[in-house]
Image 1: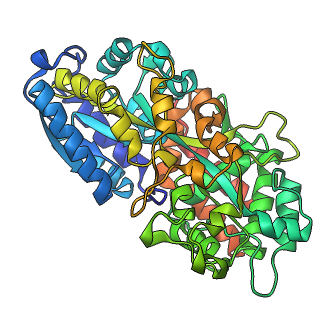
Image 2 (image 1 turned 120 degrees about the horizontal axis):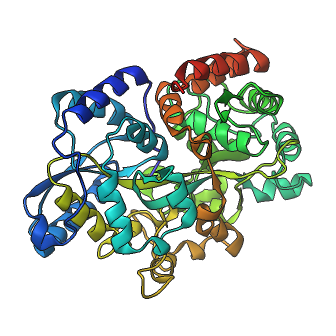
Length: 468
């Protein structure tokens, strides 16, 4: 699976639509009815896991749920890029689903800030399944104060993948610091090779994700309290580094999710910033995203065996740096069948949970680790799952314990802008409108200096701050 992306959307328009829908909802009381015998009726579920193989797997899970509970499920696959517009249009028409599956943090918090989320049903699910069976960090990141906004299901980390063979030949240190990263990018940019390939697409949240991953490593935050800090000295240093990487040591032109992966897979770039979803593709387990480097011709797994992984790249101001990651959730929406929604989410997080994780274990670290009787039941089951699409194999066949440790530590190490500051609604708007990606594209294209880009983004973010 490639990183899923979202388009530019005026957050104010989405907010107006969501407020209208919230005011007109018949399900404001929410909660109750996790028992399939009392749920009944039918529910609609939107899922962002819309790739054909994963959608088919979810159809089977939904059919099994219906057989077990009697609740009919209309499953609708949506692209992450479509989500904001679909929420906007369906909110205006009063036709939102009962459950949203695999929804990202920023969108969850934006909907939560606009009273779209059925927090009573969500809390009932958590209590039924057992709060202590979930990763505490995941619960914190999916809550707003005392309100639990969603049920965290799985997570992935943003990682820097690098060619260990090229680093060793050049006598380079692993790219774990700003200095080591920039030195490696400069050294490995030669006549027929780039030091790195990094996102510069103005319309792609992947660009923001890549920047935020570097920013967190230098202690750069979007907001602190109610003060926008994206133009702070620490953040300006991240802009400076990103400008150098994107304009001097990365392929020219707009770099996207697909082009960055293709460049690294072809051996044209020595480093790439991506998500853990790349790991099965890097191992040659997916035909539509195979490594194509010269050395890969006789061994699809060659690139995986000659790649290392870094999660946090520490800058000069990053004393207690965290790593960027995403947590996907099941979200109960204020609707007509909260009992059915609760029953479905509970089923997906218990009976069907291992099947859910098995769709893409390289990008689905479990946020519910145990089942109440065994504290590590789901974590243990996940560790034995096979990854891949056209071929399947355990990731342990290709990666050492250090790389696998990246996957298992998602919940422990994840950090995100704005959420711990109680500014999830700001992050939702910021992610929808993508002022950072726009500024990065202009900066790496030569239109803005690092300082100008930081100032432009800060001004845009300031306009999005919710009124206190």
